[in-house]
Length: 384
Image (tube, rainbow, N blue to C red; front, side, top):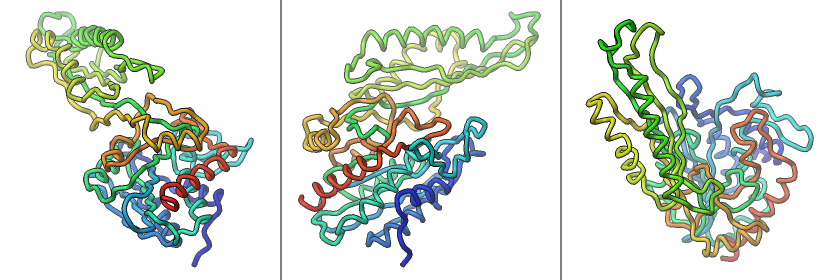
């Protein structure tokens, strides 16, 4: 039997395996190498391993590791992929751990391969044969893009844990609420022609200009009509992310697109946001019949809310010494919650480091995270 690595070595091995998720096919990679490494480690500890191919993905896989028997138990979940990187902004190789200033630098150290290295260390400190309820480890695919792995896992309902912790970087603060996310492309089909006679064409940029005006009104409506003071950004948001159109200064623009994203509050359904978007653009759609269309860019991610009065929240606040909070970004929590379990997002590292050059995990997170995981496993698997 191969000796299992310590925390630093496990983190080094995980970061060395590139598993980038991207909507750009030139960046997008499979994650099987990471999944197989995790499977090897946890299998040595006595876990049963189930590796599942994620349908309609580019060679992506989920890993479910289980130890212990019975009903309920604890699920520790995270994603195995990372975002792309800009090597010109990194001061080191993103796939090689650099230790400096009491920090581990590397792509995925906090978001979120480091979480699995912590789980591995804690599992070596526990008599896993004495578990009274099962402990599950879930590593998903494509969280950074489509969340296809978590969607697939939720659909199949393979397990029914009592509670679940998703180890996204929250500085070990329990997150009980976050916004949803959806992204759409608004397409305008104009009619190109020579710029010397505008009446012979239909300028798509001019129509997009009017679309943006309507959407700015919708943004204001969000601020006026919808509030949730748990969030530091209390209203739903609408962002203009990308605009493309035209090919020459002396041609009437025949085609233009605008990419937007909207982030909903808990309790708002996707259908409600889409209805608001459609109604906002309806006058323009009627004015320019057949020229304005709206298409989904990616499958939407629902908002998430966990009852703040549940037992898991109370316990998490106690062991973390932090009050629960809400965040503006999206996670896999709403999909994991579909398993029927109390669900929290709580993990090491800061979201401020995620998706940034020179991503790092600070040394001062190590003892705190291991202590948190030990207490969770004791509570929900050993003394349940």
